[in-house]
View 1 (spheres, helix red, strand yellow):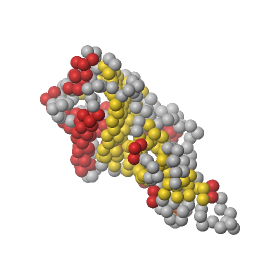
View 2: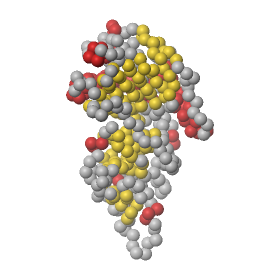
View 3: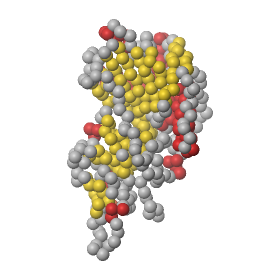
View 4: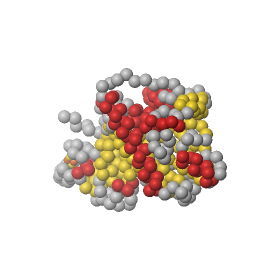
Length: 364
Ligand code: FES
Ligand SMILES: [Fe+2]
């Protein structure tokens, strides 16, 4: 029996699951974490228990009691302390530090304060609870950057959240997210575009830290919403799309004072399951949240159905292809990920797979 069940101890299985550690990942919606409730979540195959202290601060602990491993989520939260349901050990929710072991007698010398339940840095942003998943078996660095925020361009705006699960490895989830060629096939619909509208495109991309950017450009003329926006403002629409490791795609559309900003993250839950969290904010007066939600859900559902079908095929370990130029972003993603892992291993600066701006051409 292993008695040293420490926070985030890496198993051999986790090591080759293809996860990127030492990043923030969204674990839950802020609204789910309320009152004295303990909520479970899973990120990178790590079971988590989330909650909110009576002061309103969110926390994330490993959902496992360091005594015998029973999930702490079966216990209870009294505003500041999580109590295990089995032998009543009590842990400070924000630090994971043990504060009481009820069975200890006056004779016992055990240093309770040296016992910790696994815990992770936790922050709320844009309506999500983000958890910083530090590498199994490592200490947290002295300083960690803040959780990523969604760019907004005015004080007042609407905001909406959508999410769906994909039965896929994180890599397939991400390359699906950045894939420019599936639109006319997967997302055919009267309000967006028709298959017959497929035409040749040339887009410039440039390297950015840990990722790449589709340089500001006027978006596809065959998408109705962009045409509408242009008609209303009388000014050109520009779109900038970024991808940054580990999993973030941000798209910003602007026309005059109007803007629409969205972020999709694909978060690994397990090696065979990931989740897309999509948040959008905008100041377009003609777009109510409910309309956005209806169309957004249709889009996500289309992607989800495709990934479910793909998972069926991937069970049989087929050989796959990445072609130029439509799959070049996917190639960059794999190279960025490999180079980041390599630079973390060697301590040398990360090599970016792009050496400058490049134009990609495809039909979609
Ligand atoms: S298993 Fe949690 S207190 Fe014993
Ligand atoms: Fe899609």
